[in-house]
Image 1 (tube, rainbow over the protein chains, first blue to last red):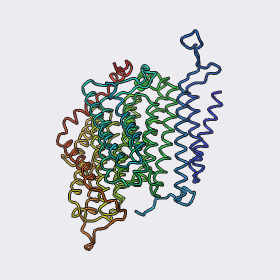
Image 2: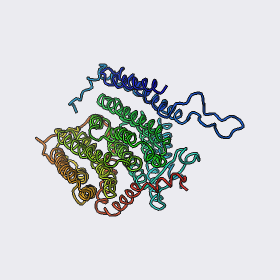
Image 3: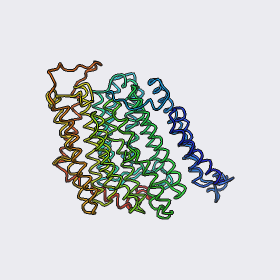
Image 4: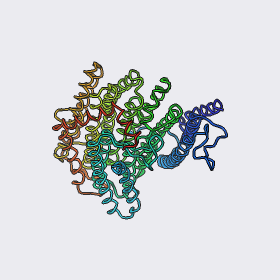
Length: 116
Length: 500
């Protein structure tokens, strides 16, 4: 399972980086989305995968059983998802505004201008 | 005492929220904006006093005990950074009253300004790596808005570059956090400091490099600095000034924190690399500054070269060197913010930021010229101003450790900084007008009293002089802060026994 997910993460990172190097702003945003998902999966896998042992405490017990899944990375990922969602939404709006102002959807049009 | 740790985060949050609600009333927003910044200033000074008196203080949020819950910690280094953030927050808030246009004020300049300060203070006070990431994002999203606010074409283009590279840096940071958690099983920095020696040293060094790249982008070190001069000169000058003063220093703070507390297993490799990067950062920054002719862009390149000095102390990794870094940060935040503020007034008087278009400012505004000279000479390291002592400590530390090459580079860069400052002086302030010209009148028509601009600039310039003349207490404080950083045992103990 780890091996499979490692391949998925690698593919996501690879395609994300490929996309953020494109000149098209839409691809750039998609690339950012892929990268943030790759990182979320990376946190998930790096913290160790546990199957079928949810971190729940059943009624009479006061502490969870041994060998349960670690709930902390999931909390981290949840936070990271919310943050990257907000960031992505902002980036989309910023891109739209920028390319409406510039008039062309091409990152090479954003060359440094020598005007004041 | 724990309330002192929460206040620097809570006060900007409340101010930001209140100004957001009071957006219809410009007067209330402006009053509250400054009052909130002043309250933050008082709170940060109280925190500094408490830390100076009791040593490191820590508090557990929600009463979750230390390695599990989120801890807020303040040692001397954190406390002085919070004080500097609050000081710049107050100075630039007052300056904004006189320089920010009504449109941006209405669109929410003050709320985001304070949310950004909250993020900055959060970074300085947190004791948990994931929480550090969250504060970084709070700071970043607020700074994104501030940079793009107003929506001019140049601004949007600058903001785009700034946003993209910072998001990538955050993703690297987050990935490093994920792997670190997998390796060490904790994200509390004090706990990590105890667990990391048990982790495979190869993995730890790899993680250290991920953190170096991520924080390196945020603090604009070589070769990761290109976003900074492409964006910092585009927003209104008050925004430029607070960014220049605080944001890259947040990256430097994080670098110093993780490379004194966590990644100290392989100092010979990691810290040598930092030292190497610091030399290249200084040199490329100052060369970039020399090749430009726009006031704020020159200053932006100088930020890069100055960041080189700050991490030079980290690379040398001795108590004196770290004290030099801390002294340098204190000096730099004040001076650099002030230089940007001066460039704003120059822009108002001359109508442009291009040195070719600015002339004769000395005759138009002798007071401004004096403020510029004080800050510029301090930046270059002319005695007896604050920059001289900062450089002296670093050079001394370099000589003591026998790193003569970096000392030579630092001296050369100081000289080139002076050259580039005299270029601004010679062109913008000293040069006589070609022919007697009528005073350039800019359109825009929001003439506001100049004293709102001169008040913070004068205060910051006086502070620079004061640090220069009374360098000893500042140096002693930096030295104690550096010793605390290099002896993490007290930090770890305070955090893990819950600040009691």
